[in-house]
Length: 407
Image (cartoon, rainbow, N blue to C red):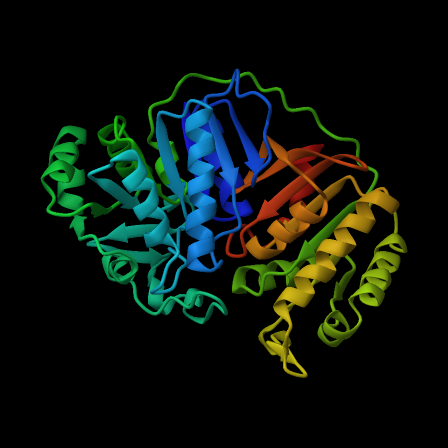
């Protein structure tokens, strides 16, 4: 069985989508939730919220997840991080890789963040977002993990005491045997591998099929050896109410909000109210959503344009306050307003909402767009169709078109 450790909740569902597409019977378990049994599964993804956690906390939490996966019978472990390698010089990608590799005795670990379907590619060791180097993309201005360099090895080296090497595209084109030999010969524990399309990922996946540890974005899952075609046990959940709760400030998400605003009701979270009176702001948002017409997909958002970005109010940080408000609104909307279809945008927001709803397991359902799917979850109020979206993923019309996949 394949076991995976994902550093945020949207990344976990992103990886599960790719595994499911590749013929894996897969489930996502949230943090320390025990699924009871892994019988009938080819892969289990543990969704953590460690991307921007303190390093020691991220390491300890990831180590505990690793132990659980090994207890469940995992014979290969996949460390999943964002396709834009979101991190600081302190971590957390390097420290987590170190503890997993140490515990499993892995001498070589590939580093493959590429996700070509979403425009993330690695060439000559440099990470691109579309046609732009990572450092020239919108990730340069990320509020938590600003990415100001593009060479993946240069991003990873400050995070680990181990050497980092590169394997360039010419070797990838020689096939899996050549890649396997080059990885084995590399004078480093970590090997950053060029991958610019799905064929490169298939070659790399074949080359690392027997490696105890692999690491990357979700794209590498497309290349791993397929265990077969799973039975599709997805069952749609009745539509008694929809909502989009959006905490991401990314350029992609702002475009999605603007597109939705042409046909759907939208409302911004008041940052001052979120900081000073979160309970009252939650109540106002819940009342506003409940007042919308049947069949609408109202959007509650934190940032609709660059001018909306507010980092502090009266010296207090806004981002965690907005997360608390969106999570509280999600809890009340599901429990009191009959919401059975919820789309959450932003990794931190998604994590807060899943925790607030007490969700322990996600059943992966229909794919909406590369890296985004509907999943089924059980809350104390009943069953819920839930989509968790990374801030930078999805087409501009996502907030209006996603519901069609549940018809």
